[in-house]
Length: 381
Ligand code: PLP
Image (tube, rainbow, N blue to C red; front, side):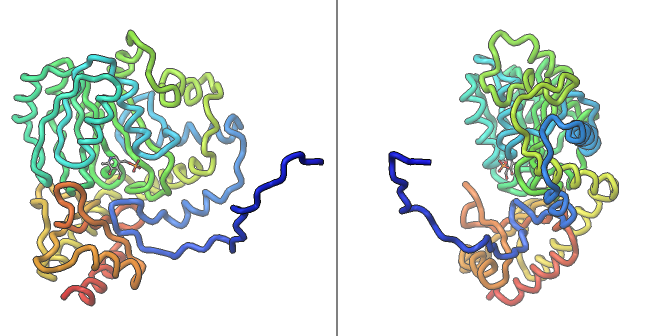
């Protein structure tokens, strides 16, 4: 081979093989993946249309229906993180001019507002102080005022640690002939969810939290009502990659190439879901609740205050108020650099005011709680 242009070697780094510290990930996500999931991820890839891989995709769809408790045929994993699955719900359901009402009670509600606006929605929002949730009456009043085509809510607001109750909201949406779109990124696998029972029409999640998998393959589901809206669109979905009319030809019986699936991530997701099915959904939710309560007790014993009232507190993510006079960022940095433990800081309204502690998926274990409390006892003044 004769090159007519010489290669610039300025950026030819001579690196040692990858070395990353082992951390205990007790922040808002990602959480540590289950070792069996990492092992499954190491399986050599096959092609994205290989019969073995297509069978695995079917298993993922069935198991996603199980963890979400839905019969929705349009239930897939989007190749991308939770935000891609979030965008898939918006892109497929919103047409320019649609009124989208977003309940904002934290950072991720604001992301929904921004995203829906980019797809041409007439976005209306209602908001709550960070750490609080909407009552059914408040939602009813807002629905009557705005008459939206879509109501979007965050079930588990990771920025605050609050759980938005969803019982009755689906009925409300049917009364107002509106679709219900729900973010379950920090609830799937760790918090009871009954999508069909609650009348949820569009939902999305991620792999790296309650499912105990690395990030990158994100659950998406759409009810028959939402699928009908998609079929009757006046405009094409304004996002080629996330258009369910195209994606469902790959995930459904046609098996037509759409994109090259991240094969190994799907291996990981399949294993993560298999482990939940083995444990049983109810046991899995109970484990998350039990370990969260153990953490809450330990934090209160350290005289720390929890930000969200117990009734609405997420078992997957706990916000802890930083005590007066304590440098919250310095403590988080110390936990990471000296003890290899990651916890999160506050976002938006809660920046500098709280730490965020996640107990999700594989990390929802008494050992994680014991380790964190032991270290906090050492570092807190
Ligand atoms: N929604 C919520 C509630 C989240 O907590 C997150 C991420 O933490 C997202 C959406 C976005 O997911 P990702 O960061 O995987 O894109």
